[in-house]
Structure formats: structure tokens, C-alpha cells
Length: 114
Length: 112
Image 1 (spheres, rainbow over the protein chains, first blue to last red):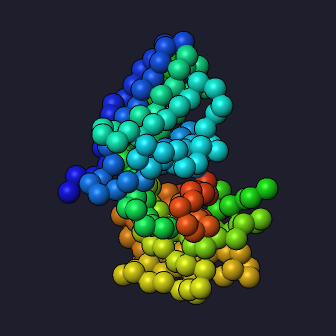
Image 2: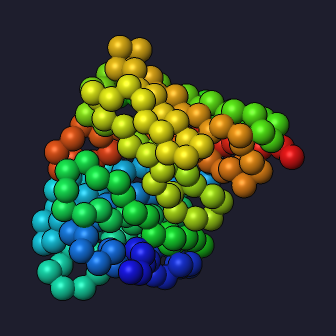
């Protein structure tokens, strides 16, 4: 059973470009979470999604950021018009459709904005 | 506002000793608490979950306690090994289909 897949692993974008980060959850998992982590800092929650639904987006910046988890295909975190401050590691995690279950993390996407 | 605090400074211990990491929280009523391990450049890995009605949980060399009166969890690694060196994160959840909130983590270094 493959783990959580994220791609790309490394992404370089110039200021003003768009970044698209993909996450394929583990088989059988219907919940996806996105987190951002800066060096030497903890994980900051961004958004929690189920298939075709956003459950909690309280950690997502109001502008430029969006996330989706379509019925078919991976979850996508989209950052429009990137700025240098968006440079960070973005982790995706998935969990089974049970309350309060542990999360399985992907390897992360390291975004660098030049 | 909600706050989750873990030892911000790195913890250095001798191989074979017991490592104890602390997770304190304020303005929060968690239904459960989780501990994760994170190695540099990798995603966190789930270790243990303890619920609010449980005092202690064990798994091999790991032990977690949860004191809802003190608002604190302790994470112990007995007979520590250099391979245990990593950052350890605690995470709190309210239950139901709600997000968990992570602490900033404590870096553990086990010295041979």
C-alpha cells in the first residue's frame, strides 16, 4: 500500500508565478490536510478537506491560496502570484474516514520563490 | 488564545537513559493528544495517540501520559538510542471531524 504521495518534491517559482502542489492520499483515505512549515518552526495548519468538500480552511490566507480535493484525482494546493514569503515546506497528510485518527504525512514539497 | 508549548531548546541525553519530553497547553480542551516524530527533510510520522479519559499509554519503549488537570502530556523514551534522535511533535484534537493543532516540537539528540 503506497503512502501519501506529493509532487513535485521541489518547486522553484519566480515572484508573481503560480505554484500548484499535488497530494495523493493513501488508498482508502478520504480526508486530506495541508500544512506549511518554515525552517525550525512547527507545522501550521492550512486546510482540511474531504472529497469535494472543504471542512476547515481557517488556516488558509484569504488571498492567493486555494485548495481542492476533487472526486477523482489528487488534492491540489494552489498559490497564485507567489511572493518570497511563500517559500516553505508544504506537507500533505491523509487519514481514514474515522474521527480523531492519526494522520499519515507525505514527504512534502519544498517551494522556493526567487 | 490557544497555545501549545513544547521545550523550545534541544534536549541532549546520553544513550541508554530515559528521555522525557513535555507538551503543555492552555485555552484548549482536547479530546485526544498525539505524538509524532519528524526527521530532517521528511514528513512527521505518527507514534502514539492518547484520549482524554486515558492516563497512560505504552508502545514498546515509548510511554505517554496525559494529565487534563495540569494540561500536560509527557512523552518518555526509555533505553534511548542514537536512532531516536529527531524532532518530536505533540498535536491536540477536539474530536469529531476537526483539525488537530501541532506544537512547535522538541529536538532530541541522543549521544552515544
